[in-house]
Length: 309
Image (cartoon, rainbow, N blue to C red; front, side, top):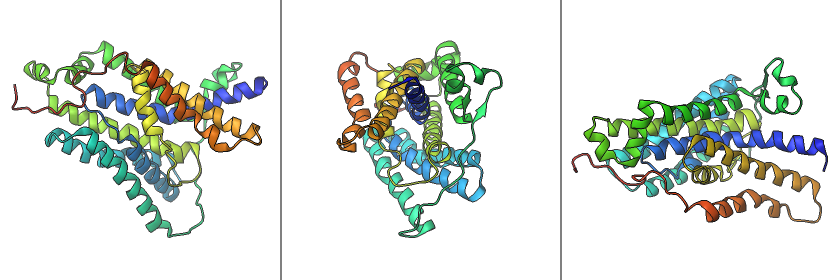
């Protein structure tokens, strides 16, 4: 282990944390409006496939990311209608999205490419270096020589922190997740905010999935999301439902993911599956240690019935 190994490990951690940040912010916006969404895995899966196809057809990774956001919103409207309008159980419909969306993605892929086809590759999004800042030792390549999606992820973290803590609109948004009936008496459009949260959640989760096939990997394979949706859900709990905490949690899990890949390459005689467990074991350990110390929004997971007072 030398300085090059450490710097490459940290750089890889930032890249691998980026899709987790998009997914965790998606869950954060959803839960702040009282909607617990365990269907991030499914939304990311369909976003990954559609982003890949659009990038392949158009040759533009940015259009692929945009398409991932659009399909994420479209699929999430199923969850939104069922849980907001029909007051259905949120956990059940979140799991339904996790079953439906990856199956739909696999079906579309096989219809488009056919069974047993060769892996098709796309051109990944190029990095954009910020002149001057990229030359700063160690920090420059880490923070200022990344793809635009990395910059967007951290810009969204800053925006989210300011929005929820410094704006009246953000406080109204959080009130819906804490006590929707009290919020309604103050004239806050509870139903509208819940649907807005579903749009934001679907878009961010779709972007997180599209990142995997437009910025991270050149091809699409079934299961490429690899549990990141559930890790992002844990990151929201680990981060105590705050934007700053969420990004630190995602960086931690991204570090674990980057570490297990490098341990696979540098170790011999040890089954690679042992190292693949590291991010998931870390998730379980973190939840066991701190997950129960602070509850989230008080109305999260509870249906809101407008006629009840």
